[in-house]
Every structure is written in structure tokens, then in C-alpha cells.
Image (cartoon, rainbow, N blue to C red; front, top):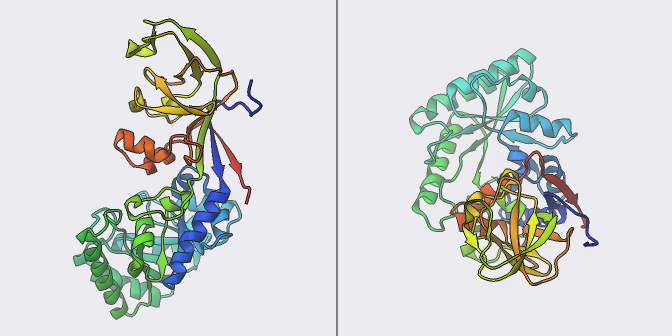
Amino acid sequence: MSDQPAYRADLRIDVGAIRHNVRVLSARARESGARTMTIVKSDGYGHGAVTVARAALESGADQLGVASVGEALQLRAAGITAPVFCWLYAVDEDFAPAIAEDVQLSASSLTGLQKIEAAAAAQDRVARVHLKIDTGLSRSGCPGELWPALVEAAAKAEADGNVEVVAVWSHLACADELGHPSIDEQAARLQRAYEQARAAGLDPIRHIANSAAVLTRPDLHFELVRPGIAVYGLDPVPQDGDHDLRPAMTFRSSVVLTKRIAAGESVSYGHTWTADRPTGLALVPVGYADGVPRTLSGRMSVWLAGKRRPVRGRVCMDQLVVDIGDDEVHEGDEVLLFGPGDRGEPTAAEWADEIGTIHYEIVTGMYRPRVTRTVEDET
């Protein structure tokens, strides 16, 4: 039995890595004269929104960004008083709680702005608003032909004392594809929208830079940058070289059973793998219900007892089987499914590459009801 604690399915969150990454990213922003908004949506990309928010604010971030009002209010409930921005709402969203907690809101349409303005007026408060222009991603954001009407309405709402327009903003579609022509086109469209807002009498800042643009396009930092995935140590542009980021999440479990099988015996559902020699097996109590993609069946390995070892057969809902050969492995031994890669273990990026997705999807999909999360802060 290992001397290490035995985990069924646990996410180790290295807060020191998050602090390091925020310092790296905010230093780049400061070189451009920009502030830093750390994005902590989706429960901090699976790392814990409140934990990440506090670490980020202590390490150089100026404010926080989330997708939903609920996520913003969670930060306020945890006692976080720094500026918080959110941008995605239900059709019947009640903006009153957000405005009462001084959460900054996005408006992509005249209707959305009017709802925010009405909620602010009902409380006799001022809503701080970021106007979003669609510069080419074609998701949220105001179409260019409707933008003049939106900024005129925003200027009137500001003059009436119900709204303060903080920013004009947008989101890049291809920032992780270095040199993609859409990047400069989107920047130009943002600039035109900004100039129209200024002409309407507004005095906003601009922001468009996500993690990839923070790392590769200092000319697009403007007054504020919005790093997301890079905060968690996952590089959106590894083709650009080493950016000194440290992955913060390790997914670990423990061996719960070992056994030997004879040559000719098969493993797991469908008998997709058959032993060509006698070998030892270790059972690990995690599966696709815990975030291990079933599509990794037959093409994944884990770090166990000092080296990488292949997972045999199909990944099951609750368990997987590791081939340990003739090596000595014990119940309770730690199993690393992915981590920073420092010891040779697989990484979230490796999982993503293997199944044709992005590392964002891997880490945000890991925090599940029966997966524990252990926060460690050694720095």
C-alpha cells in the first residue's frame, strides 16, 4: 500500500501555478499599459472560481470576468469586491441582483440595453455597461448596421443617469491562428465602433484580447485584456514558443485492485484488447462519468509506479484497467491520469490532441459530482 492518500477521483489544483500564470500575463498587459481581467467562468474553467479569483487578484489581476449573472453573484457572495463583468443572459434575466451588487453588464442590442436601464432606474442606481460589437465572430454582439442606434441610446441612458458606459468590446475568432487575416479585420471593426461611440459622446475603454492575443498581439491589448485559458497554464498558441505557463490541474486516482491474467484473456467491454502474454492488471476507479473520455479507449496511458502504463480495453463508466506487466504495483498506489507533465504523466493537452478537441474542453469537463477537488497553495 502506498504512503500517499488514496483518491478515488480527485482534481489537485495548484494555486501557486495560477498565481504564476497571472503574474506572467498581467506583466505583459502592463507593458502595454493595459489592465487585466481574469476570466473565471465555468467555475474557473473547472479549477474553482472563487479560489482562482482570489489568487488572481492577489497576483496582478485588476478585475474578473464571468459568463453569467449567477457566476458573478457567486463571487460577490464569497466576499469578492473587485470589479466583476458578465456578458451572457437568459431572455428573461433579472438584472436587479447584478446591478445591486455592482456587477458590470454587457449589452449587445437595444432591447438588452433597455432592460438593463430599466432595472437600474427601478433601483435608482447606475448600471455599468460594456457595449459589445460583433466584429466577425457572429455570436453575441451588435451587428454593425445597428451599432449607431445602440450607441446613441447608450449615450442618452448615460445622460439620464441610469447607465455608465464603461467599454466597447468584442471577441476574437481566430486569435490562436497566428497571422490569420480575421484578427486585423476584427481589430479594425472594433476601432470603428469605438470611434462611433466616442462621436456619440461616450468615453469608453476598449477590450478584445483573449489569452492568445495577450501572448502574441500586444497591439490589441488596448486598455484591458481578458486572459482565460492561459491563467490555468494551458497555452492557446504553443506554436509560438514557450510562454512560461504552468498547468494548474492534475487528475489523479488510486489503484483499488491488482490481478494477473493469462495470455489469451481479454479486458473490458467488447473484448477489444486481448493479452498476448501473461500480465498484471491494475483497476482504477474512474471512467467516463468522471471525465475520462470514452473515446480515449485503446489510446491512453497513465502514470503509475514511476512510469507510463497503457490503459487496456474500453474506458467504462466508473473504471478503467491498466496493464502493469510484471511490475510490482499495490492497492492504494497513486495514478496520475493527467497533470503538468513534469514527471512524464499525460497532460490535458495530450488528451485533447488524441481525441481531436481542445484542452479547454478537457479541464472544464472534469469537475463532476463525485470528483473531489483538492486545493494546494504552496507559494
